[in-house]
Length: 155
Figure 1: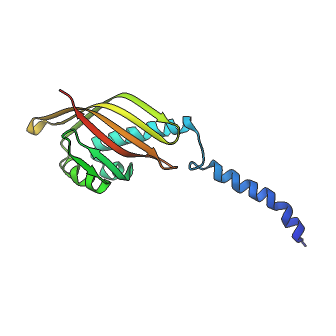
Figure 2: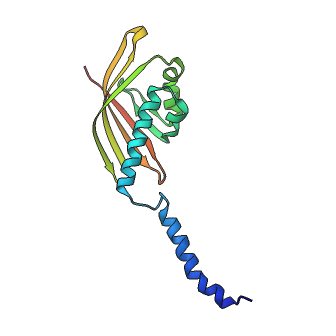
Figure 3: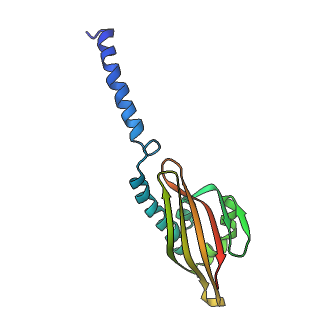
């Protein structure tokens, strides 16, 4: 028969195990190299899902509070407003989106910034837009989410 004292001896071991689990989760880990690798995937998925018209994946990579300032100067606040503004891109599936990374900063597991040289074309109507596009990401403790996007027209 176990006594109350034998349970007390197990308490420190149980608490240590719980603490180890808690600090092993991404929300508590401060692993800059791991976050940098995770960011590499997140930014690639962000760009490729937009290019490939994968709305569900693209939306999943954005904070609900995201802000977009288009190269035209138009702004949209909140992922629902951004989705509405980009509805034709995902519905028509005819734009050609290309990008070249120019610069990036990843601040541990907190924030990241990336600058791209981008081209958005709709050949059918002769539309071509060349821009610098900057994207700011925040880490929510589990994954990177795009929170700010701004375009600046280039000649």
